[in-house]
Length: 196
Image (cartoon, rainbow, N blue to C red):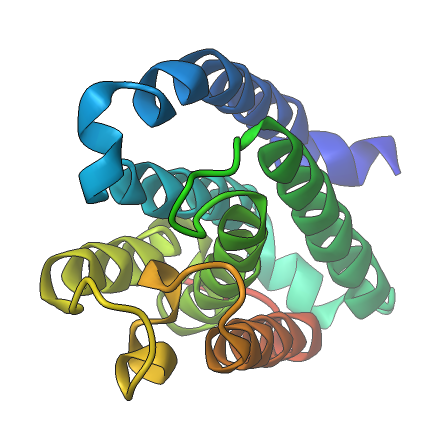
């Protein structure tokens, strides 16, 4: 157990996550309760923090001995499943508790949904491009949607712009859950890509 924890750099990832979540709790009140927040200026706050938590989780999947992991007789899927599920639960709970509820429907639900969806994207990225670059898919997708999605909730953007929807949109929850299950399942079965 301790070898797995140290080889994946989990103490560093946990420290980075703790710093990010502490900063989230400190900045949340300032971002939400300033005068411009009525016009939706706090929405990037609820999109960027889940992206950063997913990036930290994704990069913690890197193994310095990935070739050995793929040929070892151990059942790595259990370790990977525990790693991903634990990191996602801790991130979602901490971010959900620290995120205040805004007047226009953004808040804890949006933050938790973002952690689920972006962690799924980071897991899929770890399988496709390697764990060190697993931050790229959630970052590119999240920032692209942040710039492109309409500011009114609902409609077709509920599915492709799920991270920018208010917390109660069922289509956005379904998309985020599908991304998490698909990405995490792919990572658990295949493991991170081996890059030389």
